[in-house]
Amino acid sequence: MQIEESVRFIYVKVLVMVSARDGASGIEYAIVAAMCAAVIGIFMTPISDRVKVLFNLIEASIAST
Image (cartoon, rainbow, N blue to C red; front, side, top):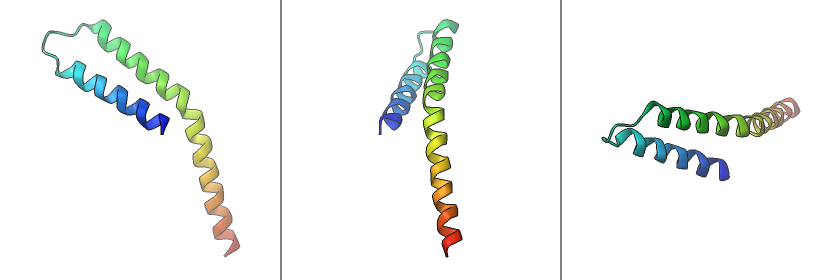
């Protein structure tokens, strides 16, 4: 659940920043983009590993039937 919470946190922060009417600078957008890239980079390997395991389980169950 930590991944979902992190993604939700970033999503809310992006929505708040985009909806702010006080004029966000390019630096703020760059910081948010860097945070998104960091989260994707951190969680991409564990997610892809889980997907591979899931597909291997599906393949094994199909082969056994």
